[in-house]
Length: 623
Image (tube, rainbow, N blue to C red; front, top):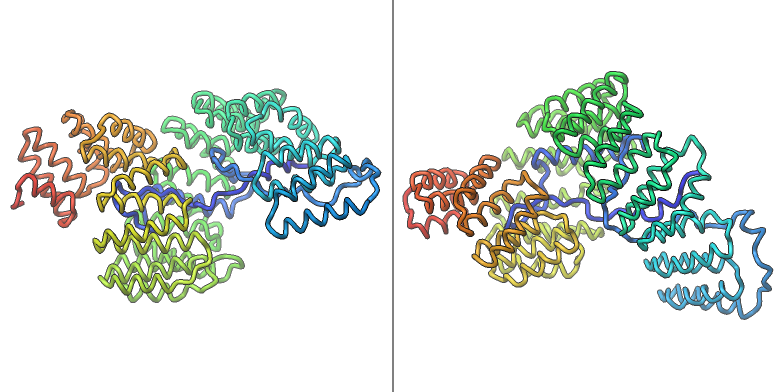
């Protein structure tokens, strides 16, 4: 048997993306061809849908999602469970209580139904009553109540695997992995030898869901002490060590997994994602695997992924070309090759791959050709061929997952033509049942208003949208940016602090708040801590680097500010960064350098607000 308890808390967050947005700007809600790292993200997303489970990575173990879902284990009791049921006469009182509880559930009143079944379980010692109470608590998203009920269920059915699995899961979720250890050990003992490796990884995934990750690591090591010669055990421990920020230990665990099994792809992939030095080690392991297994699709995909992470686009492209040659109807290589060609500005080649992708998808059951068509439309629009873009969009059918994004793209094209009101009418006409689509429509509408410099309307639109979708981080961020533009700094700060609380690893939230404080010359020590935190989370982000430099300037450290701003500008030539660099150079006595920086910035974006305000303050009228 498999450890089915790992499925209980595997609910994926509906938020698909944490795409970085430039500091203090309305984020563009639909960016098909973005930075190079987004190519890797797109490839990984497609890979997750196509690769075999042996190599596909589990759901992100660092998620903070603690929601509960109905387990697959629920269902009729097994014969072994039925044989020990208590002999309880079915009295009219029991029937009445059960009916009353079920009626309460139909009226969306889970609390009295739960209490009724819990009381019946205690009175009758019937585990089925405790099981039903557990089901109700889980459906009501109340893990504490579920834990109380499942422990009663296990007490009355001590041999029930389902009760034991759920009890262990709920104890982990409650931050008590040590209490769950005996139950987990018992379940592990039941796993057949040929399934044990995957069971160890599933166990780590379960422990990663709990808030007590250090305790989870201790429990995991105790449970796996006799399995340390398995690469899966080393991989599982390494993953948990990453969750407690013990990077050196995690590296040793992944390396040990590769020592045990040199061609163990999951460990090589984890190693390759840790840092430049580890990446080379991971790449070497995967290269060796591919040399030994040249027909392995999963191996070549893993190698291409690590090449992308190392910014080795040509090497990644070679792997996808080999995969495409091996199977011309495989959609993954076609999409990857098109995205790499776009990044390399080989638009004709990209277009041909996208056309081929869409043609193959049309003939492939379950595939969505709309993904290719919308990329083709975006590519045509970027090349100013709106007529061709519309033709591609017309090919996307209402049953496609890309149908709503296609209609949004039409609105964005109208906006680029200066038809703001037509664009907004196009958005208003879109029928969308999915809350995520509704939120995206609201973001796009606000972005159109923002680009038209209708800032109060944009803020009002986002205020309503965040009220409708309070858990959407992108809307929260955009609302903060719009409020900042209108001088509503209290709203901006409240929204960003809310975002930091819900997403403590979101660098843009720290960056935006820190930059705003520094730009207004307020609470500079706090601003410095905020932007440094953002930089630690995203060290190569040019806008964050600019913020760190700007804070240094505000604090009087011109030398470091200039170094940081020059590096930021080299990474991302941008009018706002150029405006900052020019100002610091001017203040540092290098007026010629300042004028040159401003001149270059004006070529990039002559109407940039920050640049124009800077030139006005320094009374520079002729560049």
